[in-house]
Image (cartoon, rainbow, N blue to C red):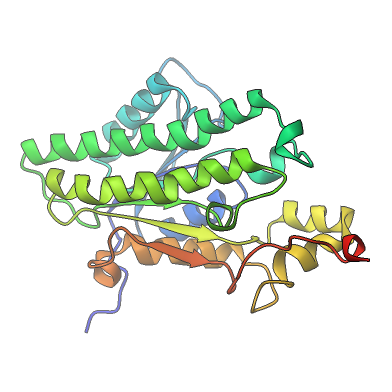
Length: 279
């Protein structure tokens, strides 16, 4: 029985590759021998192609704003130019919950922020998925042989449980990890036989930003990672990355398709009332 991930040589495109979780995911794929195109709006712009190649033969960084159709198309074209057809795509890029303005009620929420969240987190993921599928269609017409053909959408526990202070973020995550995922499940197999689309839904992830937030609000660690979480701890970034590797590998998950893998330490929901509110 072959228990290797067998990702060596596979072209993997990752959006949000410069983020706190994204950097760990990029490093994980590089460790498997995959060829990685890392996309992020944070990368420097060099020339009209928006590309900054590294000396590494195994990876490249490409500046990309996933909310822009042209930017996504240019980024994929640059990725394909260096490493060939994108076999595996990880749709991680988006506006994180922690960078958004929170409101006590939807009555006080910003419509402008909702529009921006949908533009980046939903439309951006849709644009990335579409460009990946278009690449597969071209590869099929050209008679290419690809391994590990799949899309992994990074959703969130918020897509299941909601967010009282950020219904915009929760709505966006539900859209991609349910509506988009289930639509693509029936679509991609018509474009490329054996292509798979799955998602992961992380709980609170133990990033430096999460640690800082918990310092500012001593109750947050309890609310987000203990009160309704069976393992009573946040999810390490490495666990998120390893879950993505599992879904990317045909050798391990060739028959996992249209599924959401919850990587949330056994979370059962959100705290609705704080201790203070119940006094």
